[in-house]
Amino acid sequence: MGRGGLAIGGGLGTVLLLVAALIFGGDPRKILEDAQNNPPQQTQQSQQQNDEGKQFVASVLGSTEDVWGQLFQQNGRQYRKPKLVLFTGDVDSACGQTSAAVGPFYCPGDEKVYIDLSFYRELKERFRAPRDFAQAYVIAHEVGHHVQKLLGISDRIDAQRRRMSETEFNQLSVRLELQADFFAGVWAHYAEQKGLLEVGDVEEALQAATAIGDDRLQRETQGYVVPDSFTHGTSEQRVRWFRKGYQTGDMRQGDTFNTRSL
Image (cartoon, rainbow, N blue to C red):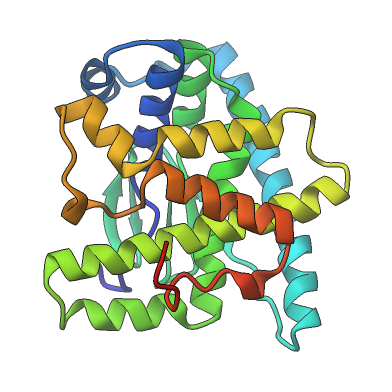
């Protein structure tokens, strides 16, 4: 646990590289080795893509601020905007020092969303994955963790960590991550109403949610599944909760902590 609580959502970077491998073909274990041993080189072209990536991240983040600002206001609350940190290599946050290998993450301790743009270049250039919505989905998921922070949910979960076994806390982590998927779906619901989504975007999100389920990833990388080690939920669960948020647009229907069946 870091100084300011547990970093949330970390690992999606590597996870989405695995998504690309699963969708477009490739050995996931080789993907992990290459991502760690061969960091992308900075060129004029990559710098231009980096600038475009910054603009896109800022645009998506602005969209989430509009959506959540309105929803919080409707529920008698005030939305406090998260801060965005773009980084390469290692980054120091209130949750401790984190490497780019972890991928995008949210730190409740400083209320910042940390994004490594080199991951998105890797996703696009090496795997020809649908970069725009993959990137938007990740940002919306991390902002979902910020919503949990503002609602007091992540602090309550973090406090329980000290009194639980690893297996018990993993179960809570799954519920936390599925709720963030639900909140990402809520954002997509209103982003579509505003005309910000293109045809096929939601389908891409559902395809990605299927590919990044704990069961799917474990089966692909190690050949077997260990449910007690799940931290993000199965493919079916991730799809179902994102879809529920997208279809309802009602943040009150995303209580993953008080439902028996996930």
